[in-house]
Amino acid sequence: MTAAQIRQQFLDFFASKGHHIVPSAPIVVKNDPTLLFTNAGMNQFKDIFLGNKPAQWPRVADTQKCLRVSGKHNDLEEVGIDTYHHTMFEMLGNWSFGDYFKEEAIAWSWELLTEVYKLPKDRLYVTVFEGDASENLPPDSEALEFWKRHIPEDRILMGNKKDNFWEMGDTGPCGPCTEIHVDCRTDAEKAAVPGKDLVNNDHPQVIEIWNNVFMQFNRMKDRSLVPLPAKHVDTGMGFERLVRVLQNKQSNYDTDVFMPLIHATVKLCGKKYGETEKTDIAFRVIADHIRAICFTIADGQLPANNGAGYVIRRILRRAVRYYFSFLDVKKPLLHELVPALAEEFRTVFPELANQLDFVKKVVFEEENGFLRTLESGLGRLETITASADKTIEGAVAFELYDTYGFPIDLTMLIASEKGFKVDEAGFTAELQKQKDRSRAATKLDMGDWTILDEQPSGIFIGYTELAADAKVLKYRKI
Ligand code: ATP
Ligand code: MG
Ligand code: MG
Ligand code: MG
Image 1: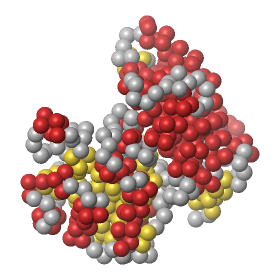
Image 2: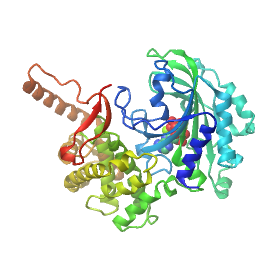
Image 3: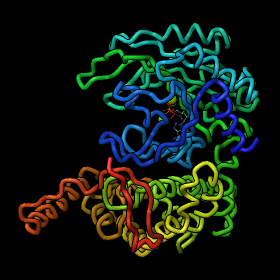
Image 4: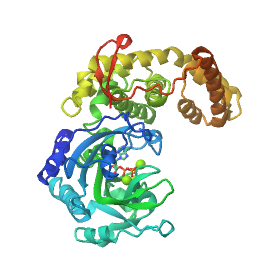
């Protein structure tokens, strides 16, 4: 089964259960001060869960573009190193807004996985919330009972608050969740580590694929829990992980979601995939990062020096450094991957194909710009690490940032490869000094006027020009 068919089957299944299929919300969040990027399928329904807005349909399903590179959910360090965490990924989801609850949600997850996708039942485990007395949270005995109808009890594991209680942020909707894990170990791997307690990162081939959240509470600023006006279901299944399981691969990157990008990179750099661990990590990181970069730009966020734009610039520079150092490519490469990506998603997320030339141009300009200083910056780092004593000082990290455009996490990544640490606090102090200096300068220039918000408010609806230097952004007032 191809990835496209797997995605379609998910949507068809929930449509057959009375769900309305909705489009993905943009990956860039413009109207929520608590969030930079969409990091879960439920984000676009937050107001419904809070009771601020009525639901248009009681049941919906979709595939949502998500990004987990900042804030509470930051998977950047895992990318390319493990086989199933990405920066940008699709989260398949089904929702009930005050309609069905635990019984149906559990039954349908089981039906889809075992009857439609035909996953062997003995490869699945589920987890259920065990409760947390310190926060007055009861165990989820309802979910436990419903699962017992489908799966032997010894495949149900009780999980703690960290893994089995879902919260959107410090405040907002929350509730217990039940997760489904798939055991992808080979027989030899199973024999080496017998036992069933292999969930949540205990073994790299036992992976979480689906989270069913039962939203019952709203977490207030003072940490108290208030019952929501109506109970809701919010589920999220990692699409790339599901494809990997169904295509019987040992890694998400070996599926037809990522291989077209890896093949395209192989062609461009002349190195082979599967030869050394170092180059393979570079191939995987690039295949991952290009997706995050392109979909974010296509949704209206240009790389920039601050805010959400800086997150994208950081990811892009990280990818550039991987091909520069490990694939021996010294000229812009990422922009050459944009057409393959746009083609792959032409029918699911057409916004990329529709803005192909523009996105390609922005990516090219960005990587070209960074390549001008990357080599000197790396040279500077070489000199420093040859003489310094296992720690890179804050002032030096700041110089790399300010003069060579090295984001702090890039300096830290390179430093750790060499067995060095970075004085992060020292770097932050230097950065603050620079901000204070430029604020003082701005005050002089602006007189009574102060810019409060550099981000335009409204909903991004497209670019009107294709040339990066002549672009005009369009926003609709909200
Ligand atoms: P994990 O424990 O593997 O980090 P999670 O518990 O943080 O996952 P959830 O917040 O429950 O993930 O999100 C729902 C689903 O989205 C997960 O079950 C998983 O299949 C998928 N998912 C989460 N993070 C990523 C990621 N970084 N890349 C790919 N898929 C992901
Ligand atoms: Mg996680
Ligand atoms: Mg988890
Ligand atoms: Mg989870």
